[in-house]
Structure formats: C-alpha cells, structure tokens
Length: 392
Length: 182
Image 1 (cartoon, rainbow over the protein chains, first blue to last red):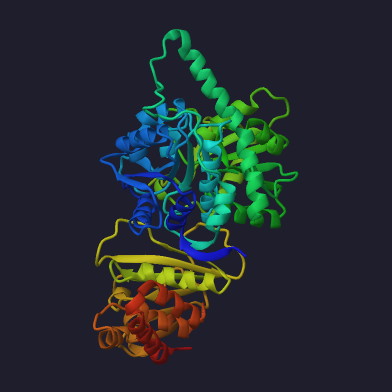
Image 2: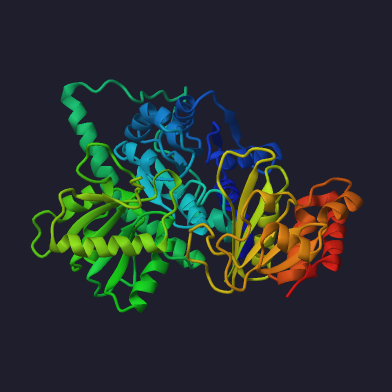
C-alpha cells in the first residue's frame, strides 16, 4: 500500500525531486514556485538529499547553471514562474538545442503588468517554442508523478531533451491535498541512473554548442524538431511503465464523458477538475457535452487529439492566455491549424478565462458551451471571447 | 462534502489551522483540500483560508463561495467582514467571543446557527499568547465534527513538536467550553 498523505503540492514535488535523487538544484525564488526550492534547500541541508544546491543570483543564472551541470553529466533540476521564467528565456533555447535533459517545474503565473502573482498560462505560452517537452498537471498527484516521469523521459537517450512540468500557481502549488508517495526503492526501480552519451570531461574533451554556420543551422533545427516529435513514443512508454508500477494511468490527451458529445470543452491544467464537475452537471441536464484535456503540450499530440475530438461538432477551447493582437488564444490557434480543411471537422472557438487568478467556475464552463453552440450557428466577428469581463 | 471558510488576520495561523484540518481528514482516509486566499500576506490584515472535506474525490478548484461552516479566529473581525456571506441555509458560524448569544446576534446581525467560545481568554491562559488558531480548532470539532479529534491532535503533534501539548490543551479546553446554539 502506497503512503497516502495530506501535503502541500509544492512540498510533494520537492519530495519527488528528492526521490529522483538529483545531483544539482539551481534555485532562485519567485512566487508561487518558491516553496519547491525552499523545501529542497531543507532536504539538502538536512542531509536527506545529497545534491549541490546552488542559490544563484537570477533566473538567467539558474538556467545557465543548469546547462553547465547537465553538460557535466549531473541530474539537474530547477523551478520558476512568470517573469523569472522569462528572464531564463535566452538560456532555455540552448538548453534544449544542446540537448540537456534538465527538468523544470513551472508554477504557472500571469505576466506583469499590472503585477499579478496569480495563476494563468501566459508565462508558459511565451516559452511555448523554446524546444522543451512540456506537460501539464491537473492535481497534486499528477504533479508528483509527472515530475518523476520527466526525468525518465528527458534522460532517455532516444530523447535527450529538457522537460517542463507545468503546475498551476497557487491553485495547485499552495494546496494541501491527498497524495500517494512512492518509496525510494520504487522510484529507483522506475528511474534508472542518468547516463549521458557525452559529458564535459577534461580527460575526453568535446565541444558543445559551437557556432552553426548557414550550412548546418537548418539541419540542426530540423534534427531538434524531429527529436522532440519522436519523444512522444518514449513519453507514452514512460507512462505505461508508470501505470504498471503505480497503477495510475496517463495519456497524451485525456477525455472525460466525451463519447458521442456534440460539444467538447478543451482544457489544460487544474481547471480540468472543475470542468469535469461542469460536464457532470450538463450531462445530467441531458446536454451532449464532454471534455478533452491536453496533458502533453509540446510536442503537440495532433493525431491523438484528432482521434478523440474529431467527431465533435464544436470545440470550446479554454485558453488561459490572451496574446494581444493575436487571432485567438494559443491552444485555440493550435487546434484550428490541426483541423484546417479537414472535411467534417469541428468548429473551434477559443474562450479566454482565468487570467491573473480569476476563478474559473462551473457556470463559466456552462457559459462557454452555450456560447460555442451559438457561435457555431452564427459565426462571431472574433475567433475568441473573453469570459467574465466586467464592462463597468 | 463540507466546505469551510476560515477568517483570521495575517500572522494568526489561520492557514496552518486549515492545513491541519485537511491533513487530519486525509489521515482518516477522507478526501480534503486546504488553501489560502492567495494574496500578498500582510500581518494583521483580514485574511481567509478554505477547507473542503469529503468522502469522495473532490473535483473542483473553485474558491469556497457557499460555506457550510465559517470559522472566525479573531474576535474583532465580525465588525469588519461579513462573516456570514454566502453561508449555506443550515450553515454555522463559529466565533471567538466573550459576548453572550443575544449580544452577538444583535451586534453582528447574525441569524444563523452559532457556536461561540472565548478563545482569547483560553489562549492567554493556556498558551500565554493571544494566538487562537489551535484553540478555535477545538470549537470547530465541537460544533461540526468535520474530522476526528484524534486525527487532528496527531496532525497538531506532527506540526508543532514540543509545543504541541500546550496547543492540544488549548484545543481541548475550547472543545469543552464551546457553546452551540440552535
């Protein structure tokens, strides 16, 4: 029987990082991520985790430190949010392109200004294209499970890419809830030691990250792109073995009461649980609605999404991000590309909700479904609609 | 599912109280959530925290809008905050007060079921500090039984270590002295 305890999600994530037996943690505090690295500092100070704990001077330094550490062959972890994640951005690109299997938990938070410490997905959408594998957790248990899974996938020699696990700031990071923690033996059995193909070693010098002349740059980008696409297989295999060991099942795209549904809500992250409650209510009222939750955001699981959602008439996509001047939110845009010109494919509308910590409630999901149905009959001027804007 | 809203002031340990209840519920095999009203934490300012305890998995991340139970740690808050806001029809408000039921009902215009205990006096006498978070947990147990006393005491021991005994004593005295009205 697994150890079921009530614990804050951030603390549980830190414990999962300890179970992964990391060699280095680069830490720079930023709300709402701070509890994760705070608890890791305790674990290292107490001698429970034998790792280098580097309190760096900025997030830019944090990611630079992670790159050096990973290049030397060390299992490497960091965590960030919002403006801090943006400050890392410059180094996120080489971390991925140089194929460093760093794992980072991002406690998703809004971008300034106005200053907001609260949750939405603007921070990660800014970093959508940095070349990292990106997953989203719906609850604390998933945050723990996906963190352990991330090390395994990132370090797999068929992948060798960094991985971000996204957890909603505050709405997950600061909540106490029940979680089953695996033992060290179980974690060790699931996660083999990190054996990099190349590492910085003065006895066997190698060059990492040299200049890419026009003759090779395109090929390097294509190789990265192909590598992240191929990672899907390893991601799935990691979840399959996770299910075999721990009994909890994960998939690239997950559904809830979606069979035969005319309207499908599409969500990412912790609002999915509230969305399930909304679906239960609407199904009880006889409405033909269901839910599709995207767990893997990069690489985007296109065929898998089409398979579960392609027969619906309407998709009501929830975007936790409003990119000014864009045609619609990023998840909506992704799905519109996916279904473009495919005969009989669903009509797609993007609903922007839950910005900067605004609560997304059952009634908001009902509103999205109603509006999506109406938009399907009469095409609106914009491809997106912002839920719950106060006009006065 | 029972939903609780907890009112306190920053630094009074309201979030800790909420956490202890959730941890106790989970230790009893139930499902529970505890979370603060996320904001810039300011010592002394009115703050809220939320608890859900359920026999079945909890599938919501909404804040608590219609609590079954409201727990107020600070005696001065009912004058500043509408503690009964959104309270369920048969909900209960648990107050830290030295006043009589009639005085409380008149002063704060509360028509709901009430539970009352003079937690300030208990905390000063038992802990030597006017910090009422663990004392008011005794009132919560007496008025609602939302979790078991043994599980809550164990959560308290794990959290407070060597000062757990005093806090347990304050909790138990509040449990004895809490008056629940009809």
